[in-house]
Amino acid sequence: MAQTAGSTEAGPPPATARKQRAFRGRHASSTPPSVGSQSVTGQPQRGRDRSLLPNGRAVLGGFLIAASGVGLFAAYQQSNAAPQTRYVVTTRSLAPGEIVQRDDLGLAPAEVPPEMADEMTRDWAPLVGRVTTAALGRHQFLNPASLAEPGTSDGPARRVALELTRAGAIDGALQAGAVVDVLAGTDGDTKATVVARRARVVALNDSSSGDLGQMGSLVVTIEVQSERALAAVVGANTAGTITLATPSAGTPAHPTPATIPADPAEPAPKASSGGTDGD
Image 1: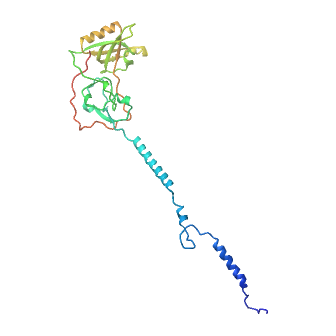
Image 2 (image 1 turned 90 degrees about the vertical axis):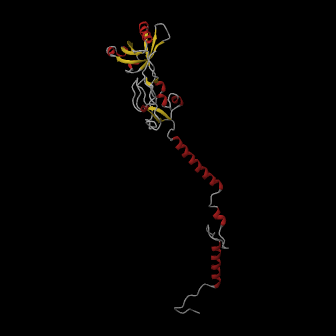
């Protein structure tokens, strides 16, 4: 029978509708559940969640990396730590022949090689009252060998002027007040003899070396404390060649000392009086 105008179309046959519902059901069951979703029974997917956590080996590796970082930082801090050992230094410039006072000495921290530390001292007390044998700069590590014990003289000092080569007078690097040893040698003799110890330089005149340059001579006036030393120096100057020697000065401080002066709370020993002497 023909349909009348305005009527609706009929739906698909019942068999076709059943096939479409079956197709949609198979398609939905083949889609895998997402991670973290529940299964068809309503239980969470525990196996998939557990795979996202680090295992024991990864945790141990992270701990070792953190520990090594802490060790490196500690080593860096130790290498950059300030030195703990303090050595005696001068707090002002000292001229040759000066008696060292308590205020002239201080302590400064320094890290030095063992061979250099052997030439320095950490105890300032024995140095007070001694006499400088060479010029010392401010903030200079002090070598005890550059100081002499003040001796007693057997009467008034004696002075004598010597004309020496520049080499024999330490290339002219002398100052009034310097303490020197006087050595004598003769031609053909391979050994020199010490004829006077701890003689003091009184004056230095190098005007005669103006025309002769480095090969010129110097007139050095020294002071000795005994007639015997004076006779030995004059006799050696007549018979051979005179050479003057001075103790080496202290080692300059690098960097500039930071702990100056020494602890003022420490009692300052009294400086002994006296001057330099000669043999």
